[in-house]
Amino acid sequence: MSKIFKSVLNLIPRPWLITLSYWVRPILALYYRGGTYIDPIDEKGFRKFLPYGYENPREGVLSPSTLSLERHRLLWLYLKNETNFFDAPLNVLHFAPEQAFHKRFKQLKNINYTTTDLNSPIADVKADICNLPFENEAYDVILCNHVLEHIPNDTKAMEELYRVLKPGGFGIFQIPQDLNREKTFEDNSITDKKERAKIFGQYDHVRIYGRDYFDKLRSIGFKVDEVDYTCNLNDEEINRYRLAKGEIIPVVSK
Image (tube, rainbow, N blue to C red; front, side, top):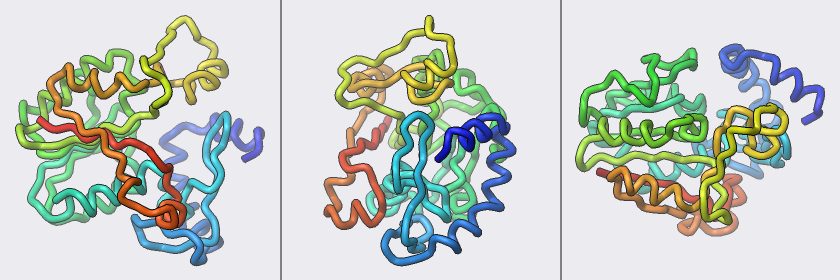
């Protein structure tokens, strides 16, 4: 992805990008169709996946059809193969709903599906994750993926997630994580957007989570399973689905 193209994308408001992507996806899917790689979310095949990323783009990770990344496809496989998400009657709360999932989850007859976000044009409820308008213990499943790294007071956000999760329910709280880093890193003195993007991955990320992320969730009260679901797949499957080998899915329960 050229620097000029990335600069143009950065100037487009996110709601416009989301709307634009709905028009672009069918064109990309048709152009790149093939049989080398499979997107498990829609089960379509492609001759290649696209690069994605700002500072250091990752090659071959963006699905031409669903616009899913490695983490989305891994989560889909986990939900489909290891949980009752697609079968049981569940109240589901989904923060910052990803386009790869949104329409598909809305069509599921077994779940009562609520989406929430402060800014997303496709969210049902505009809400601050640190002050949610939902009742205690209201949801069987909470999906909150790549959200907490944007939240200055992530402790309060985690407390709210714990409050609205039902006993016996589960949540998946994926984050960008450096597993080589023991402690989470924050530095609010860095204010330049380019410098923040270089250090934190995106200018609007407020921290880089380390391995202590799991213990922080436990300190809130969650039981946490650090699931490496790629261990259930062989190398050929990991490559065919374009997954990140060793990526951890934080599965929490109450």
